[in-house]
Image 1 (tube, one colour):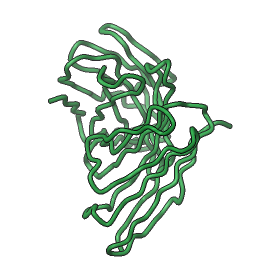
Image 2: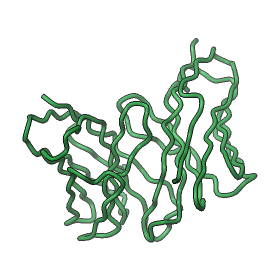
Image 3: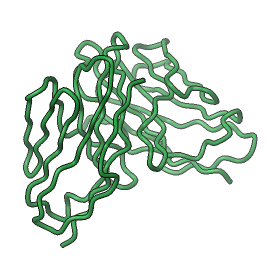
Image 4: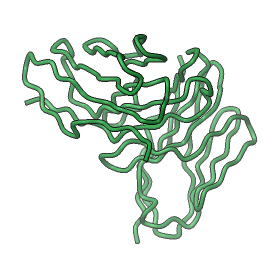
Length: 114
Length: 113
């Protein structure tokens, strides 16, 4: 079945540590996205990528970095510069040519501070 | 500033008790509006896309409608398995080749048996 796989499901970060969240899709989608979800708030866009080797900052990119070396993969690194990283992180993808199609989401990674 | 507001924040109903969830928006241009369902600890699951005022979509006990300023998600005779958080997202025409979505904060719906 086609879909988006995020791993790990739970992740703990120590002070001063960088951590990387994995996102893999087999939907053959060109565009991929990272969102952050906090209680009582809407999903907020961190980074997005329209095509391999290209990505753009979203609304809350500070303290995060991404790469897009393969169409299927869009990993997110939460750096030590992100002072409030505790949140639920969601990866999504969508087609590029028909951009009125809905985004499909993975089942998220919950990041906590040790 | 583009804004999407959902109300109520939480809604508790008895099984079979119909109601509506609201999603109001003030945005500079609308390419479409999406409704998603999100279960605890899971990612959002797509329900509907609405493109223009007056449009309606139905799926089982759910019906989504759209006006120029808001969308409603009507739930008829709900069952406990309809309990979830329902998210709406407005699709803005600001990124070529990718989607710019602005999400509401969600409505947490609980259906008691």
